[in-house]
Image 1 (cartoon, protein in one colour):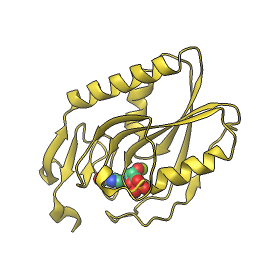
Image 2 (cartoon, helix red, strand yellow; image 1 turned 60 degrees about the vertical axis):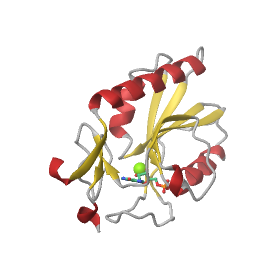
Image 3 (cartoon, helix red, strand yellow; image 1 turned 180 degrees about the vertical axis):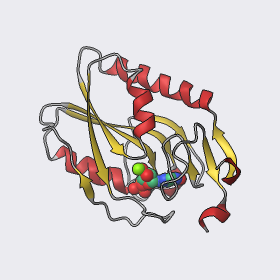
Image 4 (cartoon, protein in one colour; image 1 turned 180 degrees about the horizontal axis):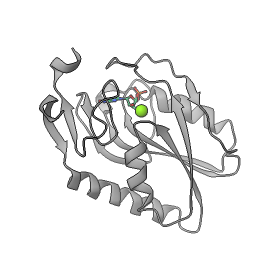
Length: 178
Ligand code: IMP
Ligand code: MG
């Protein structure tokens, strides 16, 4: 697996530091409130597990599965909900947790979809952001780090369902997906 990585962008230590800071900021901003954290599976799973352990206000968890790239490294632009929330979010503080914002199409769709369910508030947290590839304007309220326009894997993030278990985040060699 490791031989398929061209360059490590974030070591385990780098990631731990970023995630801790995000958790502390979120805890501060929601002081005295409760939040419903919505993980977008599967990519955000490992990030979410680490993040919520740095959140000190009460947290409810729910998950959504949306259609992604399949086995291709390019987005289709079509978003489908494969698994919806289990709970009603009306009147709740919602925090969407995503692994990467790329074109922004997935989050723009999800935000619009969830806002129609009348939450009290809705914010977005993404570990990584590829601003170079944005196709639609979307505000990321809590962002771990920007990354260059490369295909990355590790720490829950996959290529064709592989590499999720790498403890670091790295750039996948082009020859793997081209
Ligand atoms: P968007 O709708 O184009 O913003 O797509 C976001 C989703 O695409 C992310 O949640 C990831 O699942 C996936 N994605 C985007 N860039 C990468 C990448 O570099 N590696 C793996 N998955 C990616
Ligand atoms: Mg994803």
